[in-house]
Length: 175
Image (cartoon, rainbow, N blue to C red; front, side, top):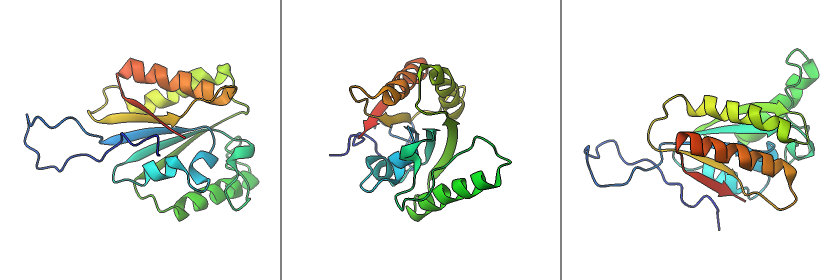
């Protein structure tokens, strides 16, 4: 079962105003601890991102889970002038392109790993930037299921819950 099953595409443009149809999804802002959340085989996040709506994906951290499934390097953005870094970022972008998710826009924070409580404010700020000052109806958040003992997912969970409460957005989880 996909934990993000509550996500559904936006209604056709010809739905008349005032129609009793509930507000449906128009855009998803998804959070991944590392790019591996999207790239691993059978990813619920990739499945959700493959639906017919725009997805802004925010990958929070680099680290061991950031490596593409082919065992290549992870996606790092510590130093944009570093030529080796460009090759690493290119490898992750290429792996994501192979997933063929045309509605996906990638954003990377490249916070140091492991994520700690100190990263929470940066994550809230980045998510708020993606949500926008006055988000249109139908914006939803998608975040990994928090797991007992997983401090990084706990940081992401706290930040996404805060943003969901501030903007009154629905929050869904993926496994």
